[in-house]
Every structure is written in C-alpha cells, then in structure tokens.
Length: 285
Ligand SMILES: [Zn+2]
Image (cartoon, rainbow, N blue to C red; front, side):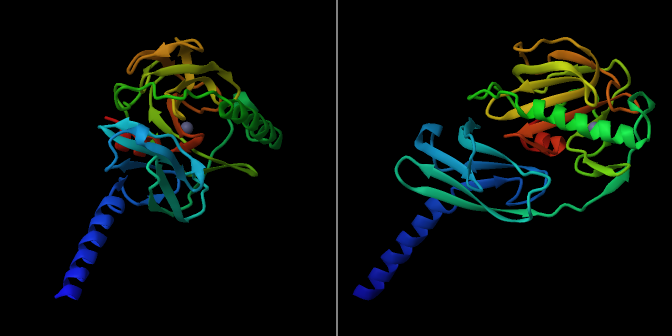
C-alpha cells in the first residue's frame, strides 16, 4: 500500500512536471523546418515577456515579444544553415528553463541560368565580376542597417501589392556565368508603376538607388524584422520616416539587375533572409 501510494505520487508529479515544462513551448508551423524558412516559437505557460530572462536559438540570443497574449519568438533559418538539430532555450527569471529541439531539413538545390542585362554590361566576364563585386558592397550596406529594440508593428504583416502573384520563388540559385547568386527573396508580378505598400508599421532605414538592387527601400519593423523592396521606379519615403501598414511607399519598376518590371521583396529576421511567403503564412494576413 505504502509503496504503491509512493509510486502514484511519483508518477503524478512526474507527469505534472512534464506537462508544465515540456508541453509549454509550441513551434509553428512545425518542429521540422526547411533551410530558408521561418519558425515561430510560442511559450505557452508564461504570462508575460517580463518573466523571461533570455531566449536563445543555436546559442545566439533572439528577441521575444508578446503576440496573441503569449511570449513569442520568430526564428530565421538561413538558406545555408547546415541540416540537423538545433536547440531553442527560454530561460525564465524563476531559474527554470524550457528547451525545444528544432530540426532543420535540407532544401532541394535548384539552379537556373540568369543572364546579365545589357544595361549592366551583358553576358561578359567583366560584367560578371562587376556584378558580384558590387553585390558584396550592397549587401554590406543592407547588413549594417539599424533595427529597433522593440517591435514597431501592432498587427500582423501584409503583402506589398494589391494583387500578389509569385513569378520567381525564394531559395534557388541563379547561375550567372562563373558565379552563383542565391535568390533570397521572392519576385511578385508587377507591371511598371504598380503601387507598393508597406508590409507593416516601421521606420525607413534606407531609400536609395543601388547598381544591382536598383531603387530600394528597407523598412525596419524592430526586433530584427526588416522588409526590403527592390527594383522600384519611384520612392515616396525618406530615411527616418515612420510608415504605417499598407502605406503607399513606392512604385514598382525594373531599376538595377532586372530584365523586366517586377517587385522583389526580401524579409529578414535577425539579418537572415527567409522565404517571405512562408513568413506571411506564419505572421501575416
Ligand atoms: Zn528577385
């Protein structure tokens, strides 16, 4: 009787412990994610962000915010992150920590040739070198942009056009002569002069012409979330300006490395460009 009772108490406390500390993290859309995709981690049994001292993924600190009344973290999985298992940890101020494994699966590698337009020197080795060299410089500028320490958004993200059709998907590699350039954003169908709207509330961190990305706007939504709009024909906003969700910020075009008019968008989480369509499926409407 005594032993059985003891075992009962042990099992009850064991399963209670499991339900509080193992089931309290929920990964959306799934604990398995492809390279280049975003993941949302919801911390279920914690009432507020202030009860959390730190959240990390793969050993690096990641910001936490309140979404649908739950502390929530957005994780960007780099297109080139090695497939395998990675650990998310939420450390609570009461000394406990919650651990969750997230499995990164390899994305099928696809390569397609993409020529260089005449305006950027055509398909010559010289033009290829100029392209790759200037891309490094442009990426360095994009990587250096400031992000706010709090979320500027008050609602979920939205698509940037009135009508959104993907013409060129995220994640494949473009073969340009001797060089390969990964497409780390998505191209949307947009004829010259189509209105482009801010995907959420945020602060304009960059509004300028680039050789390859063309006329470009970067909106910082805070906490490392940034949206980028490229190959524009007209820019209507200035650096430092606060933009609202759905605000007209530009018109689409084909400036820079573009063969035809379209809108290229990039979504970054903590500096990592993930699939914008998957991001909108997770945290958009
Ligand atoms: Zn593109």
